[in-house]
Image (cartoon, rainbow, N blue to C red; front, side):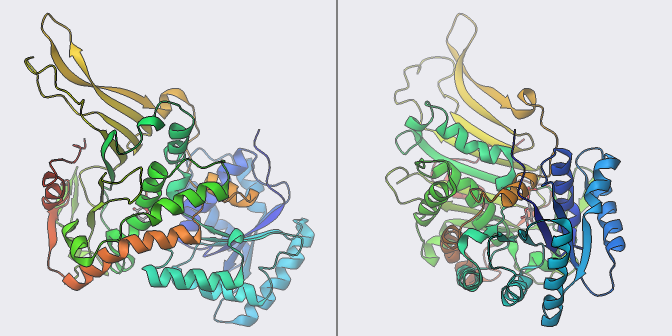
Length: 497
Ligand code: BG6
């Protein structure tokens, strides 16, 4: 049985926004349905002037009906929404934070939540610091017998310098143990399962190194285009949006050393260690070890996708990449010489997230004279999209009098073994924030190590401007040039279905 979190207030900045409606409230509902919310609990939505608790509740309720991952039980929803209160506060108006602090104190007495508070910043990144500073100024972040936690969404900075500055500024207001930097990939079952696969089984770890692994491919392909997020995306691009956060989470879990214990300090230290071992490339190396692309009009299934450059709020001459592929190496004893190929993009042929570990060929081709003398490749594939599971590809003999060899697959799919309720992926993360377990959250050092590794690519691409930006058709597998990144090493991307 999972334990219930301590009584607490769940204070959401950006309560009227998309993230709150689409992910946070449905996740709170799922926790309520699983009886995993504290017995004494309140949800406080921070709103702009003039919005009442009733109006906020109505809007959140509509959001739940639209985005719930399972049928909504009216009694559970009613109990959850009875806890919702709207409080006005605006970081540009410090007095509103003094008033908010007083209202929270009163509300907490009535609700008997004991002063524990989780401040969830579901806001644009530019608001992270102004809000935190007001919370700090009014003493709301001080832990005097009760806990105070700050949950920060991505993007955490836009480059190495800004991530460092944000960390330094936040760490003046709160201690590292109070900050929960969310990366929603860590809420996904298969992502958490990487550690279990590696460290709860005796058979993988002995071959999990440069002696047996030829290379690793990490793919996060998306079908959707940029849609209504033009203004955010055009200032961000595929690299910043996905690589130092989501793809590096996958990379660090696959490459970290075994931690001594399964606790936040040990696990996060190993992750930070391996990220800081990614070789820092020169701008010249970064250019030759990367491909960036931008989609133009095409069709995905029956859906017509227009040029990226025609997306609302995108600059008509933008050179922002919607596709990025990189080759990285890790400078340590386990991984020296093993290339890691990463690719991610929008408006591609399929939605697919996978880590494919390619093992070295058998050392001696003794079946040379058989009908099939080219062995197929040994891959271990861990995927979260389109299905969550693990797959092993190996060679086997085709039945018959002669030795014919063919590649086959052994497949494990979560849904075949476990009956899990559909989730938003945020339940685990929100629950962990409430029980104070930060194992699944990014620590300042790994965020900075991630930015440090991508900084040469950002710099090189900035200097190159539109030069080298490869067009690709929406609905394709990405720019042709991404293939050359591997073929020049005698390798190829796994074909995605
Ligand atoms: C978000 C990015 O963090 O992750 C989006 O900002 C992206 O651009 C999304 O679409 C992908 O998440 P998932 O869970 O659908 O792979």
